[in-house]
Length: 182
Image (cartoon, rainbow, N blue to C red):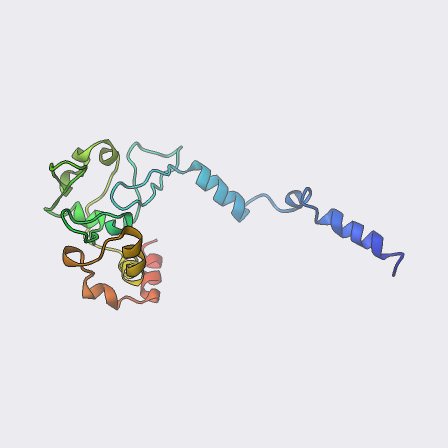
């Protein structure tokens, strides 16, 4: 055993060395390569309302930023003016509403339906009006309410009170909603 062990160890080291390991893996469809390719080719611009990341790739970018699912704006720290109440709006529902928002620190408001008039960071986004809101984000906000409130030093209260309906979603409901829409 003393005679054979060094050659076996040497053989194992050469087969599993960090220099030769990548060459021994099948390069085609490796999860790490797919992820790296995707992340390096992404746009990475965030929605100015909810901070969802544009899913367009650099080579297939049509000019406007877009994302299949927008999120609750409170996740990005948006709150109702003159309060410390985090927003419960979701971008796609907000742009279908008759409400307005403040695009900057001035007192000028912009109707959500005309969000592109809010300035360059809004004008470069395509947010499709849609009243269907993904249950996942409702569950997420309810589940992590205290964490979000602590992070932003604001609350989900008053105008931003989490609706009772949001409390009924389970983690499984949230995951199922992603599976249905993806």
